[in-house]
Length: 330
Image (tube, rainbow, N blue to C red; front, side):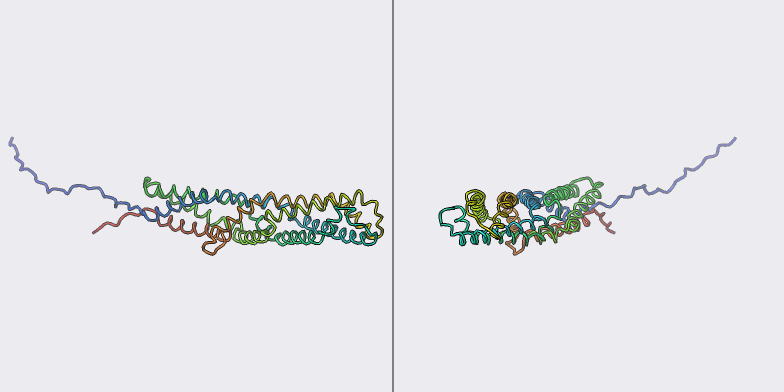
């Protein structure tokens, strides 16, 4: 048997198998930084600027005046003023017809001297309150005015978190970071329109201006002094003045004043008390309105558009913050 001798087989060298290398992912730093800065501002500014306290004060003011700005309450105040006017006219008539000596009834003497001024101040107060009613109703319709700072801070925290994730977090979480930022942006943009905040903020500015003349410590002090004068006058009408025998319409009007006084005094005390208790709240609301006065804009009017503008800017930054793969160089 012969052996076959085979010559060695030489194969051409094959190129090495290489895995495809993915293009590197480029983080978009500028939009992420914008989100982070906006988030920090939205978180810090409401606290530093006292927005929580000012918004809460505005809501307390709205809640406190609610019972005094209903149609029934305003009509009742009108009836109270009519009763007081009729009583003052009747008192003058009795003084003249019965020749009542000055000094015999000091409380009534003082009321006669001040009745015109008291009526003028009370009429002005009621006029301011009644004129403010339509704007009050628009402000009250916003509902939850004191929730706005919480919305701003929560949106700010969400944006700051998204910004940090996009800058430093795992790349696989970039999509969720963008979604978080967009959700916060939509909340800021949508809230003003859902709550009708633009119309309500204009009404709030007008409401603050309308009530400004009566929402002062001096005005409250004067109303309280007028109330004391009325208390003394009606007290004498109901006691010692009974010795003076008025007749006819004057008698009816004075008796009507005495009978109505418990209701009238309750109405006056309630309204003056609400004003006095909310002087600090009114000042806080005025401070909120003055936040942007330096640029010639009402803070209340600017508030909804600041929310919308911030939301739009954050949404634009979020939409461009998604990391993109670098193009391969050929």
